[in-house]
Length: 252
Ligand SMILES: C[S@@+](CC[C@H](N)C(=O)[O-])C[C@H]1O[C@@H](n2cnc3c(N)ncnc32)[C@H](O)[C@@H]1O
Image (cartoon, rainbow, N blue to C red; front, side):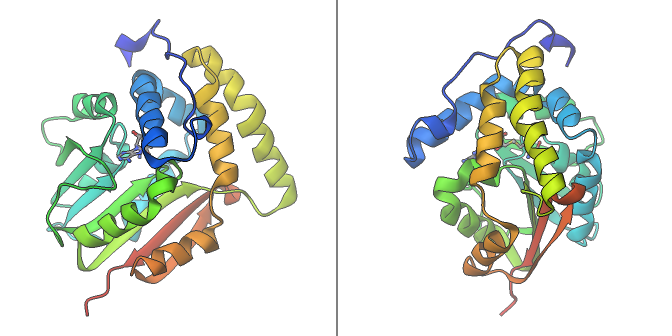
């Protein structure tokens, strides 16, 4: 992160302000994350109060990997979940359409790391059918909401029968006092601190709006079932602010 000191994020129109058309939305998401990339990790760990490390470990455990498995991390960003998964697998591929995010992920890879990174779109994965024993994604599904059907269909296609999917996404806490506290944190505090750290509050205001517009865990579980996954379930973490969704691609 040292080379990012002094860099500010170019203000951009937030994805949900450019209309709901898949193309325009997607272009705005890409521009936003390319601009955020130099400061993404620092902000990410700060904003989750460091809890994101534990959420990623839980995601890896939920895959029940063996050392011979290959995993795909969709919308990998700077690759933290791909690196965590690679420790339990033979190989992990992380893909993301923001080239700056992938560039940073590659700079974080050490010589012994079994994670590789590609620039690719979640809704049009450049991988053969049934290539992976696990597919993961963290905090990205809100950003592909206009083409969620295609993204889930692609995750299903590249997964081998019997393989598992594990998806982390933010949620709105059910308990009222926690929901109010979380609302204050994401709506008021994060944009202000985000502006100080990155020079723009727009991505953090978008984060709040996109969490509000996202499906409930039960609704998203239904979407996973509709995509063909079985054994679908979820567990709440971080006082109900994060859901870890899991499912299996049936063998028959
Ligand atoms: C909030 S970040 C999460 C990154 C990473 N998974 C993590 O947990 O830190 C969302 C990521 O989704 C990526 N993304 C959004 N839409 C995408 C798409 N259609 N195809 C591939 N990547 C996409 C963005 O570029 C960004 O890196």
